[in-house]
Image 1 (cartoon, rainbow, N blue to C red):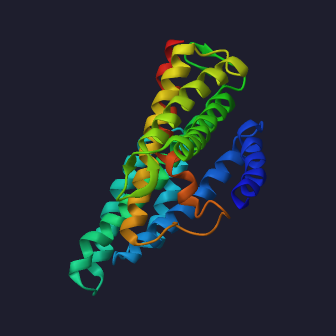
Image 2 (cartoon, rainbow, N blue to C red):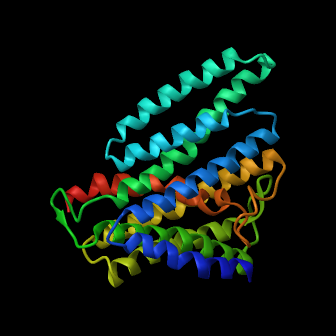
Length: 276
């Protein structure tokens, strides 16, 4: 019930930011979610004796997100280079145990890559104009993001219910004992069907082959993202990354699949849409 109530509250807010005339509501929501998820990631890292440079990570995460907002994603590479140098310099100047230097620097930089760079891809999609190369479509970015979130959420829902009713074979018992191969296949098929439905209902501009391919890609990669975050939690010895969202756990628990799939949407919007 808590999971459903959280969705009832959160989904309208998400849709408002996606369809608002101003992209900055979505940018603000994504930035808040990214910082909360980064905090949880650094919390997981701290549980396995990493000592990430948290404040530096937050600062450079904001720089990375701003680079996508400014339509200068290459600036994110510069920010990561600078973060690596700054983090190494902090480790060099500290008087702590040198055995923690490598994992502290690594967790600091990886947290920004994992959370900020991947979520920044969504900002890059939201600020797209209605005309991308030869493709012209009203509310292009809103349609792309609506389709994206529908694919991610329904993949998760399909995998859950198919797994509960038909699941017999464990998918990754050491990482997530509740997930099954049958559930994974069910989620994958639901994603492809969802892609077709999105094309029929509101996204007429894209070919049906694109809708099916994007659904298949997200249906596959999203489940890897879910397992990857479960692996991090398992390694840290916790069930959830946090308790921010009732019924869902932490912010990182909620956006794990979204993070992995965000680059797919970004490059689809930037590269493939030019062929339409």
